[in-house]
Image (cartoon, rainbow, N blue to C red; front, side):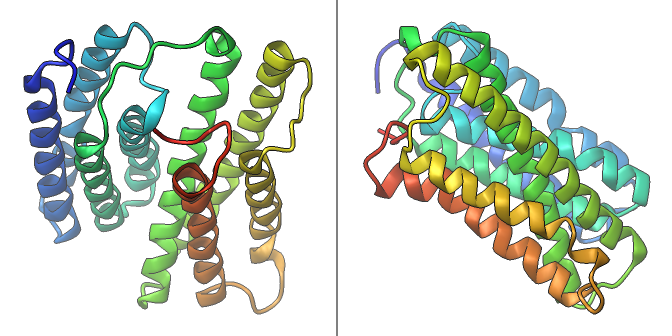
Length: 254
């Protein structure tokens, strides 16, 4: 590990991951005062983002270590409002637990310094990546709600969380693709490069364009709708991790 990255940072990241995982499990098991538990990880998230930003000189948006951290933070923020609105605190507990796991995974990924190359030094790059991870977080919430439906939870609140998460995820993902196209044009002179990551992103976009219309089809609400959300998030994870880890492309993780 480079000397510029203090060991205390990684230990704090691991500690925050374990604490957040514990808070999420308490929520999932039906804690009596859910809102304080749901809010507790937010100061940890702010501190970790600020610390990493100070280390690298930009928002944590480059490399596997930073994006796992950002993914966890996005999941905490995105999942809070629907849980409070629909009183689906057990579902929120699953989301908080997932954020803790993402931070633990981040703590074992390579924490090397990631200075942005000139092609990445634009607000369109930040808009593209941030929008993408906000979308990923929405899709994750939709998948967790889908798992709850498949497990037999049929409450109106869970179904509304599922449908709302997929709709908003699609909106954010669309904006992320638009931002990515503008960034690509500014960096390389073309909006579309036919890279494998772009192709899989198009697959995800097309899939969710269909998935958000599923509730309007006869017989598709309920378990089929839940299964569609889970399959969609599997595509998201492959696009985010599988393409970067398994395939040679411009978004490959080091």
